[in-house]
Image 1 (cartoon, rainbow over the protein chains, first blue to last red):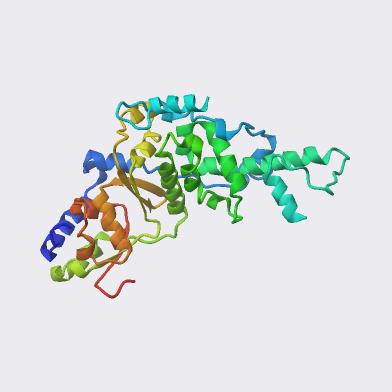
Image 2: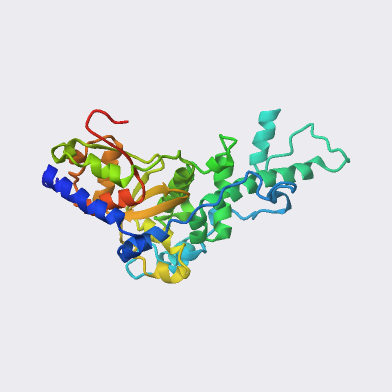
Length: 100
Length: 254
């Protein structure tokens, strides 16, 4: 437990918070800006992806028939090699060998 | 008949349901196979839309195979395709081929919270001037209760979920991933600010604080967390993201 929060310390915290909140974005610290830009708007989702007047996107597509249980991830996770990582490149390789 | 038809749609090896006819005399089994493929492809596409970072992490081929396994085991329960994917994170967690990526399920959880936040109800943030007015009575502050935006979601992870997610929004994904320390545990605050869903990394103690507020705890009580955190910065973050929609004295939460 932290020390008990007093009314005075809450008032002080809010005072600082209001100042922070009222500060224009450009003047805020870099970290806050960086975090803010992570929020990328998600596009709306249509039930039929190809849009009105066309058939659904699925109709022209043949999906992968591979057996998922014998597959190995091949995406950006493979680029995350890190000596301290429990999940970096090394482990992926090990996983492959186990499957083979 | 319809139950057997639906079952056959989700089993790639099931025989074509009996009694199907085609208008032009072509082989019903072939036509059915096309439809069966489309059903799964449309569900896999929906998952790819909702979980783009999971897909980027494991690659398209692996993702589509994983998503197809999920789709066959968990067909939609709602006609709203945007809601398809609830439970995907748990499925990922128990998917043996992804066992080498322990963070993958939490990345999926974060992406799902983003979908939830995107579709959550609107609420007007409390204007800063009004907030300031509510703070006039200093002695009443510990008993003040904050109502938070309906889109607000929290995720506490043992993995650097926010960094992983953010790395995939960066121009140079590889560089951003290279800078990620996989030993980091991170907490995420997800909230829709206007038409944008923000994903913010917050301290574990701050996540605890916000969780208490969500449970309806008063400020003074919520601020006493097990893990220390920066209270002014956290309140500033909540105010700036429009997360605080009402502040009321104890007992009168609106």
